[in-house]
Amino acid sequence: MQIGVGLPSTVPGVQGALILDWARRADNGPFSSLGVLDRLVFTNYEPLVTLSAAAAVTQRIRLMTTILIAPLHSASILAKQSASIDALSNGRLTLGLAVGAREDDFKAAQVSYHDRGKIFDEQLATMKRIWEGQPVASDIGPVGPAPAHAGGPEILIGGNTPVALQRVGRWGNGYIVGGGGPAMAHKGYQLAEKAWQDAGRSGKPRFVACMYYGLGANAAEQAGAYIRNYYSFMPQIAESVVSSLPTTPEAVKAAIQAFEAIGLDELIIWPCIAESDQLDRLADVIGTLA
Image 1 (cartoon, rainbow, N blue to C red):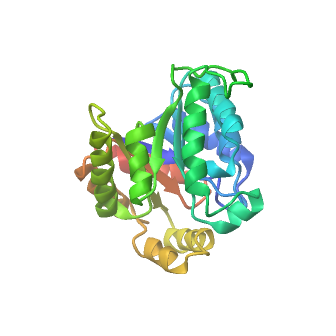
Image 2 (cartoon, rainbow, N blue to C red; image 1 turned 90 degrees about the vertical axis):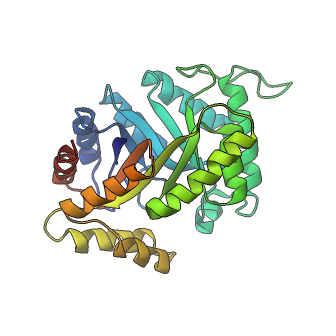
């Protein structure tokens, strides 16, 4: 199982210099990917802009949205931005995409919250056409640049509803899930795998999950405060995440091993504390897994 790390780009007050330094250091290992979260009505850095900056200061590590709320974006612009990052990073982009759950994000973007699933389906079709070099429509030419790989960057579909999971079979290269623990992740993947098989696709979808962590003195308090702030619109969910949040090396190691036991391909570990020592502490835990 590969292990990636999130960028602290959603932690309130984080400075850009720390995010870039975090990306440089993560690129030196042992991490497989850099993940970013997406919100509109929040203090976070915009995820594609953040990954573009990270691409400029890294050479090896993959760049992943975990996830991007696709319906908040224009399909053609999102396709162009994604292809640009993919080409500029020599094919290191993975797009984790989902419909999102916060209605205020959609109000701020002036996009219909209740039509977000339909919008997402249309976006996926449009982006695939663009990445294949086809015209957007009969009276609109193609949109470039070409992505690093034919057909576009890797797409992971997020979500837990039957409709969301069907998209894995139709459009995705894999399934991504976050915040619910190994049991929920495994249940979702089994449904995604069935959707993949029903779509007549060979092999298996890639399986990626995410979890939070915080390490060091006062980690439980600091990480808990961040989670309660980030999920303030869902207090019960926030408390559920806080109650299972690993904040000691032993707990982080046990959580990683639990995800590995369900056959995960890659685990992205999101930081809750924007301090540079968090990356070193996590790398030390990963070193004990060998």
